[in-house]
Length: 240
Image 1 (cartoon, rainbow, N blue to C red):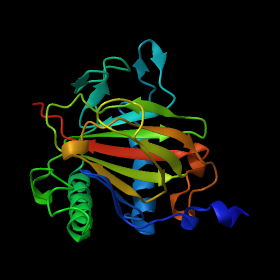
Image 2 (image 1 turned 90 degrees about the horizontal axis):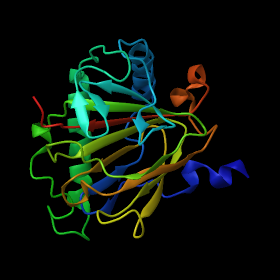
Image 3 (image 1 turned 30 degrees about the vertical axis):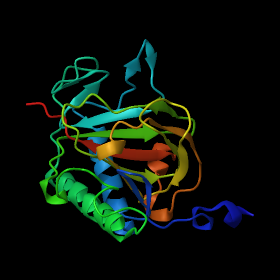
C-alpha cells in the first residue's frame, strides 16, 4: 500500500508547470543531497541561528537561515536586527554555480517542449551563465509546518527564483500572478527536486500545503533534526 502513494507512483518527468516555471524532479544526486544536508548543519551554528520570522505579529511555522542577506518582510539587511544583530553568513560561491546549473537544465526542458515556441516558456531575459543570485533563504519545515500562498516580491531584481528541496516530500501549490485562488497546480516536491520560476511566473503566488513525514530517501534523511524538509531558495536582491 505504501508503494501506491510513493513519489515514484506519480509523474516524475521534468515539466513546464507554467510559462516561466519549470520543475526538475531528481536534479540533485544522492551524493549532492547528503553534502548539502551537511552544509545545513554548519549553517545552524550561526552566527545567526535558525529563527521563526514574524509576519503581522505571528511567527512563521518554518525556521529560516539567511545566506548573503537577512530577510524580514519588505526588506533585506546584512545584520539580523530582529534576531541577535549579527552579520549573516556570506552567500557561497558553490551555490551560484549550482543555481546556474539548475537554470541550464530548466532551459533544456523548455527548449525540448514542443508545446511552447522556443523562448516563450522561460522568458527569463538572460542566459543561465549570467545568473548572479546573492541571497539564499534556507527554510526548515518540521512535519507540522506550512507556508501560505504568497509572492516573492521583496527583491529589486526580477531574476528567477531557484528552489531546491531536501528531506521529506512536500505538497507544493504553484498558482497565478493575480491572486491566491485558482488556477494553481499541486506538486509533490521530493528530496533532490529543483524548481525555477521567473519571467512571466516570477511573481506567482505559491505555498507549501503540508509535509509528508517519513518520505525522505536514505541520503536525504534529516533524522538529526527530527525529520522534515529543508528548502533553499536562491534570489537576486538587486541591492548593494
